[in-house]
Length: 252
Image (cartoon, rainbow, N blue to C red; front, side, top):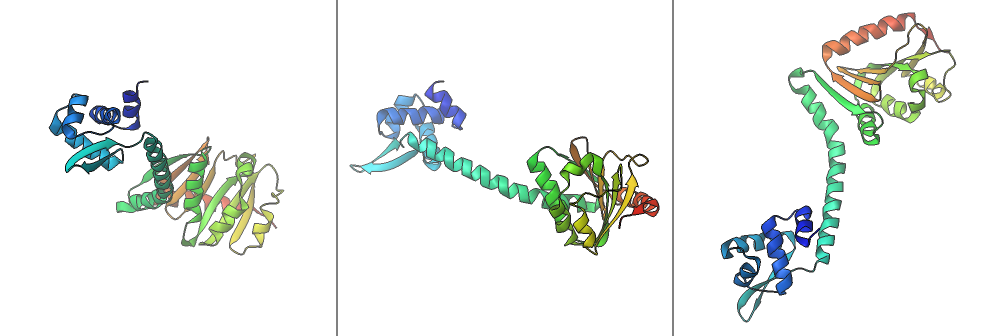
């Protein structure tokens, strides 16, 4: 690629690239000299010089009471790019924390139903969903239908413990081929807020995990998370959960 093309890829306009390269070749020059070198009108060149100064790619200075302009050393481009990368990373971190809060505000607006999708295999998406669930605050119980055979490898005891700190209670239906509970689950039974019952997967073969909290329903399945915010839908699943809870076996 030519230097001009590289500068365009870096984010400069075509005329800005011409002005920068012309100033670089001249060493330094007046607006008129840079305009002649670049083949761009004097008035337009002055505008682009101001833009390049703002970007940190050119400087202005006086010599013998006359104003001249010079291109910064090419290595400055690398420094600017590194600073841009840091800024992008900073904004990404802010956005990661901000999106769940904004989504919550959006879903609250006029109680409109909303559906959001997250890729379960994407670490960033998984962190966002788990972070949102861990931040749940409610005095009510939340309900979980958990297919251990399907999702046991994703189970996180610390994740459940963080939820328990913020909610009134946690009821979970443990669906599996047998009643033998994962050793990671056993310590949770000592928590008064946590209640667990068993259903055989042969009769209740849920192929997804469902978490019901207030008006939100979190569904994990087929490699992704669906978060559905709707009072009627959540209430309907709460009734279904309680019906299943009534026939489930208690785990001692």
